Image: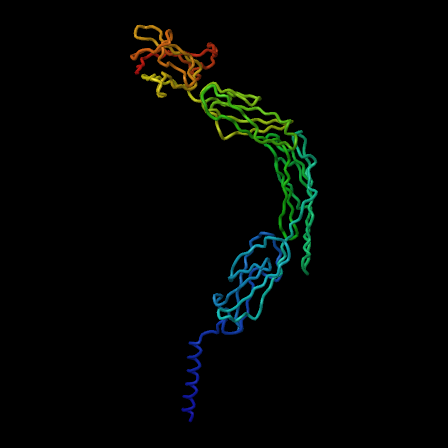
Length: 420
């Protein structure tokens, strides 16, 4: 009897042990389980608008054992504009101040809900307004120090049953900007630089949630930019400089302008300038330009990222032309750029002057095949030219022993064939 009974007990124990081994631990979706918000900690959260927050969830079975979070769908309901996201770990930021109720809703893969819905009351700092923040002068061009006074006015939250109002400590008020002299409890003094245009000053405060807010105040110096036209051409190139925009706080008509230029390859100390807005560039080259705007004690330099390009002198002389009035190659004409003066003469093979001209720019400039004396057509054949030309880039450099106003001339000679 005892032996039989012993065998039955062993058999029952074996069946139980076998079932326990192969059945495994109870899964969340098969029984009672709860979920937790591990991060952030606590049931109340104080934060700032736009601050990126990390949220982490986990859970446990009824017997206290942890379960694989992949067995459960976690849904975070943020209480802001219907925003909801899924996952056991994610990030979110509240874009606006106020009070929001965060809820964590969980269901197993087969739809079995968790026994609880954890919540957190989220308080997001309300941005203040800075009405009354001011300076004792909007322009600093007098050269006198400027006093800046900052004010902060709380915006209370009262749209639900959890109203709140942020507070601010004047000891945390800060002014930031160029050349601050002093700054205490929202009152600052500054001496802005007079040659760097307008200046921005930032008034920043921190509230009881540890959130920072600021406003920006612009003080006026002087600012201006400009355009120029044309940008390229042959010498002498007359360029017009025009103010494109300017500001000094309302007295723009009192701004004075000087335009300065220098040739890129030359010494920048060799400045040319004009206050009229019009300048004639006589020497070929590439010119860097800038504007100096002046108002009271303020100045501002604006460097344009364009240059003035004046063509180098060029003279090209053809060796054939066909004055048959067909509109093509009817004139013996030179191709030129940046010439200061020009004189052309045509001689026949006996050395007699046939034609002369000094206009090298107009469409009909040059020899049309007519005889200067008779007005009749010159016969086909070979003729000889003598051309005297001066280019603007042949200006002598000013020296102590030279007359820098004199220009060099060059004489070109050759032959041209007239076909009819």
